[in-house]
Image (cartoon, rainbow, N blue to C red):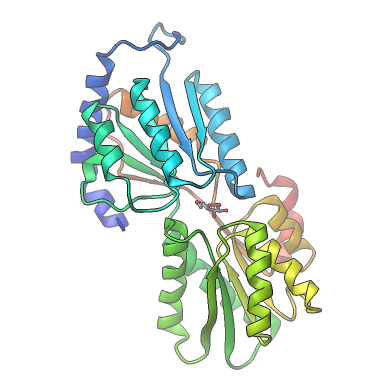
Length: 335
Ligand code: GZL
């Protein structure tokens, strides 16, 4: 997994390579219509993970709105959370000679071959939301997205506040609902949370059960029901996204327990339904992961096409929310 240092040290070299690729691409003829200023409109190929969560829907809306605003021709593909569909979409974008390819990789591995095909055709690739594992840093120019490891750390730190507020004393039994197996947010949120646990809570916190709910409500509900069968004395649920947390709430209530009281819940994302659950006292804290990446993405796409150097990792700004902030924040939530 590329970390922030890798990203930044490789910034100039790779971006220049990407830029050169973009310049070279400019020489090819493009079928897209013209935009203001007489230059040809940018044609962007975008492969989206799927529509598995409220976060993803907001992310898709942001990308589509921002592309329209920028006057780009957007070729959009929904992979239904299947890597093979993303690879096919990227191959189709290459065949259509788009100016830039952007995608959110559903999992971190298995991309080198198709990204080498894009490189061979001098089409620059921009990662958005999730990163990939690759030894060849020239295969993509930049990542526009969050630091998921930091989100995991922030989840553990805000859980400290939640436990204190709830007056919890003694050992803490934690259930973890993981995101999609092999996905960067799942790997890195778990890693960040464990970092804080190992450093500050070796003696009192324990993850007693951990399993993927695939970032969906149905997955969260089904797996939480199984957790409660095998571990009826869970104190805390850490869910890698709001949607799995919302699904888990249904299972917790079906088991006759009070979410947010009998089982304290910390989730990640900050979608509207997560804030509603928090305002109802069912989620205790949310670590925000901003899906509104569209404007930043379109800005980077233009720079990459124009051969400008861009940072290797363009991080999104986000905050954290305790339950008592939910009601006030809800009216201004944008997703
Ligand atoms: C995070 C994103 C994750 C969200 C989930 O940037 O990749 O995928 O946390 C979504 O809600 O399904």
